[in-house]
Length: 409
Image (cartoon, rainbow, N blue to C red; front, side, top):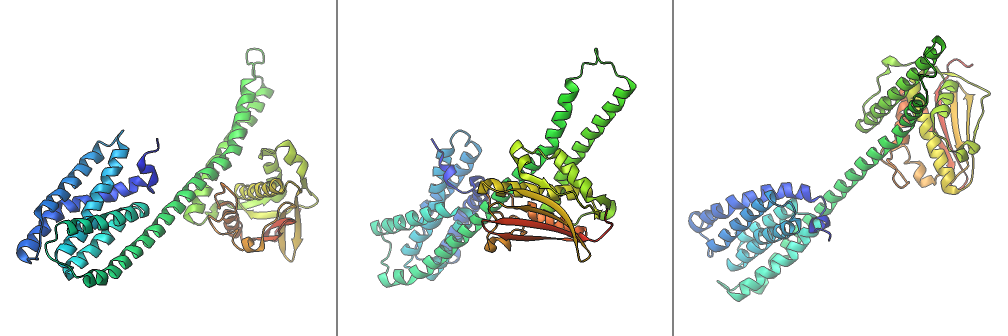
């Protein structure tokens, strides 16, 4: 059966705040009894209710350390302890003290503290249960009469504080859920990007395993072959490490280190990507590469390969979603700019979304991280270039990587 804690947004996070809140209850109940009974005497005090509040807080703290296997009971005790300590106790004392200003202020403080500690659903539950129970308890044994007008006068203030606190709690929980989604998306993005180099490593290792060294002893030509395979394995490992570094740079929004930038052939980057990208047979029939031109760019070949792989991945996803279309890659030169284009005739991008696609964590696909295109743009900008997107919904999408004009080949 589903535990009650599953109904609460991030119960571990709430428990950490409850420890602090109920610890202050253990101190506050007896301390403020002394204040209101002796230093600043109020018309009504109740030591037994305060003792009950301390006992519930102590029971919760003990239960928190022994909760394993008793999560349902622990959550119920959490609701009871907080309902008693905040809305019930302070509403009851407000009524028994004739709706005094001091206890109205104390009630509002209790509402706000409860909003800090509890999640939105539990806050609303405790608020709607605790206050009516306090009123019924007061009606059962009133210490002094309270005018209905005084109660009605206080209600707007209390409900304004409660509704504001509830709205802020929902906003806080929305941020928590959004951050969780970003973390999950980032983990998924890392896992997806690492599949390509890991697949390469696996294939090279399978090749090694198929060799029978007893039958085929190492000869000079064989040693050369093993060195080539070792170099490819090393490059796959570097690629995996580089991907992780790149993704972390993107999340942290740190600048790229250009000390290792050099001149590279765009055609060579494209060939490397096509050789290492795990294309399916269907995808191989969809892609068309125009190799008429090549150019040199200044930057990092692994970063550019990552950009190209992201653009290809998005293009294939667009074609798959539309269940039609092809993917083209070609180079061109316009007005002192070298351009690499990745064009697909898939589902296209709506104009309202086209303005957001380069924003970090923006995605319109299920399971997407929203990091790929933002990262591509940052990479190309670090090379002194830019990335542009042209698209029409239902027809095509074209990404253009514009780089400073260098040497054409």
